[in-house]
Image (cartoon, rainbow, N blue to C red):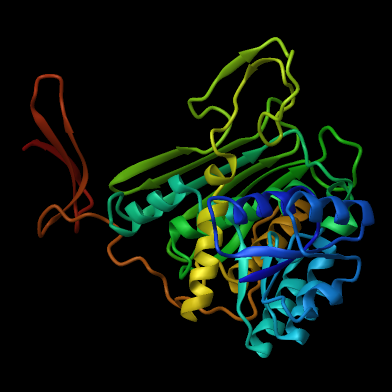
Length: 395
């Protein structure tokens, strides 16, 4: 398919590198940019047929089949509404909106127009993430109780990120959107998020928005999703996830310390990895950065789903739910209280998804714990279902 990309900055180039690599059949044919020099350079670098400084011209161009939005957050709504008007399929970078109100307007627009709409949440397409989700779906770690997602780095690369009005916030809107959606996938998207407790502060940078935040998202089945986000972390970009279930645990390290380490005096001047702070000393490059960050799998899912006429793994509805959770996080950071997640159009399960909260041992007892002692004896800790008495016995 022929794609018109809106934007010519950092993320647009990541998208172009992914789409034009390895003989892919879906490719960018034109670029729109507000910056004339950037537009011409982008078109030259990726050998595009057209470039323009008019957003509507790119969207409505007769050869444009799909519009790829890689614009600052405050321009997403305008671009999506234009795609809906032109009846063009649209893929939008994260976060969908600056808040849930904007995201809901975009969701309604694409659904009313009947067009394909995909939410470009790349970290939900990394190879490690996809394999982890499959393991969870197969029941390998039992019922998910707690997830933890961390994304931290020294701060974003463009000026608009640091402008609260244009971005919609700071580290929470920029990085929390990743972490929240990662947690939703692990816990189950059909499980309703109920409320959020969040701490946020501006610790380092002279900005109006937060540059550091930690939050908890409570779900209807009793699970907790935790996120840690920061623009104050020094040393590169740290992406890590953890999942704890009743039958097992998953740890993921997606960036920074992944087994590729290199020392250099800094004589060269090449790109190392996203958010790398230095090109000398011990460095942590990434073998195939786009692949490790999920971009090829993401675009494959989007275009396969488009051809099959089915929803992609990440939809505009997912983007809306993420924005609703982040709205509650922002409010909680102000009130210092648990704040409800306000969802106008919930499409998942209505009741609690907990079926059996405690593990039966027999007709009369719950199993608290089973362990093998240094002597080799297997010991059981049991609780009587009626009396509540806790006892132990050898198996």
